[in-house]
Image (cartoon, rainbow, N blue to C red; front, top):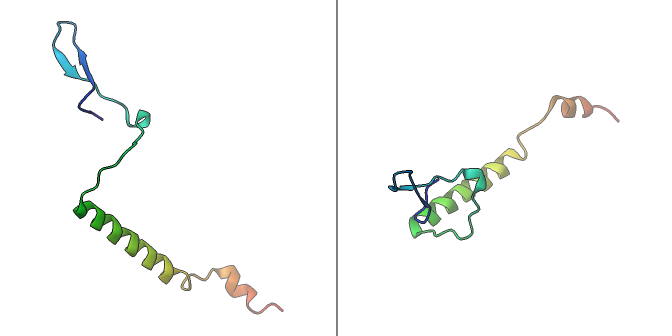
Length: 70
């Protein structure tokens, strides 16, 4: 990950950007524009709709076998 404020110097004095490993990065503030907000909201709605439609459709073999047990 490269940021605007992470610069170092080579041995000859030339400035270069210093990379930061993603595991060492913490996002403090996330700037979202309206387009990105709409995309995230659409994903959230689709995920919620898929979760609700899957609730009644999955029946395991053990559930089928236990239906006849009293």
